Image 1 (cartoon, rainbow, N blue to C red):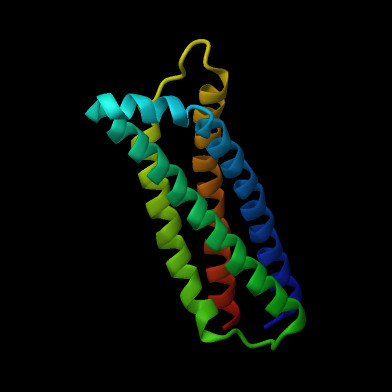
Image 2: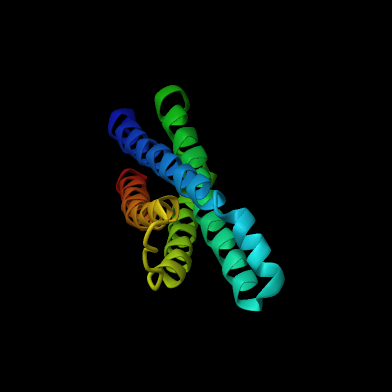
Length: 157
């Protein structure tokens, strides 16, 4: 297997993963600014408690998948640059697993955030909602990037 195209695809996937991680961090920190108020509301309202839980889980699932994508793509990049020209079995297995994980995170994120409207005069919350939308778009790009890794591995394998 040629190392250069494989390394370029892995580098691109790593770069998108790193960018998505940055967006995810910003979204989480913006939403955390309202966490104390949300926790107070959750003590008095079952709906508020459920919303707080769903917000945490949704942001967390996207962050975990993005982190896994970054780790796996950097590992593939390093192996493509410095390792054996033959792909190990875990690399072939990582592609469909990453595609499933990314799709699940996208659907989970989409189902929760698609109905959330921006709130007037609450800039950080609105920025968190906007960053969550950007994260969904980046999850699509990551899915395409992992698809490219899989197709290249299949063609060259």
